[in-house]
Image: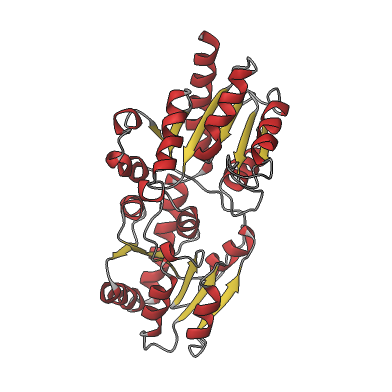
Length: 342
């Protein structure tokens, strides 16, 4: 798309959706995209001038793009308000990359309300994300909003042999991801060939390492670059997620694109993925999780190879960045057209 787009997110790490999936992939596709980093949420009660810094940044970039695509609802409304006060009209959209339970607070509801009042176009990253907002008082307005499924792009091309019975988790070590539940369940697997590789970091990491240091089958790999993470995915046979809340998890989609079988907690976004990725196994509790792991372990190598290929084909077909770009281009054009008619 020839119209310039500025993606705005919290940071420029390659695990950030705004920076990696949208900005970096746009640049690789030869698209006119820019990126603005918000290091922290502007705080009206803070004395560190974060609000003034944000307002200054918003004014400085006003002519650098035709579309400003936010990936956080906290500041998109303020960006629009600043531009209106200085007499500038810009097309602004915000993608919600999570579910309602993760935004269920009075303050975050206010952010949603302000975005709607100020005419920000809201897009959800999955059908499950959108439907989760049915409990919101703002649902009558939110149900009219669009859904564009998150996508991914495989960045490594080499073919790697998958290690049998190798489980991978790509997740932060926080309560919502349930790392203790995952490690406890894996520790109960009696198969000596089973391995669990863990990519990520977080506040629960140190305690988890201490409590499960006796299980030599578990390896903590720390924070890896996106490309190194994908190399681990290419070698792993199973991607496991025990998360309680998601929007449309890109790490799960990427793993499917690398042929991994998926063992996922039974939550709406994972059920949505299961509709399109054939070899996805959902679980509700520890007993159910162990049953699914043992089921996958029972497959012959021939069956596994078939399932790896099925997931790879399905993942790349359904969740590719080309589809994502095409849908957002339409939204961008419509938003620019609407701004021009005001």
